[in-house]
Length: 88
Image (cartoon, rainbow, N blue to C red):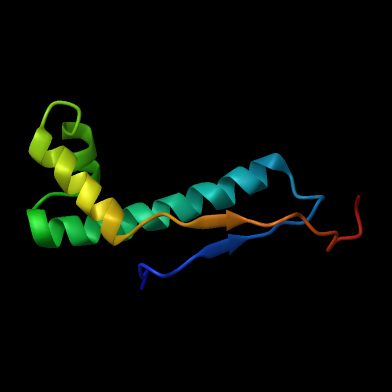
């Protein structure tokens, strides 16, 4: 479960491909969206994604998106790459 005090630390090997890096980053963002979707359905009867889509023209949806982001803030810290695989 994600908490307000969490931080996800992302560290990769210097030899990691950009495609792999983006794939992992996208998975982390998807995980945040998943927990926000679950809470949003429970509290508001619609998914987080639906609220985001409505938020440009609906003030209430915008406030709900803000509340969900506050409850599950996206905190990803990127550390300096290491040479795990021996590549430079």
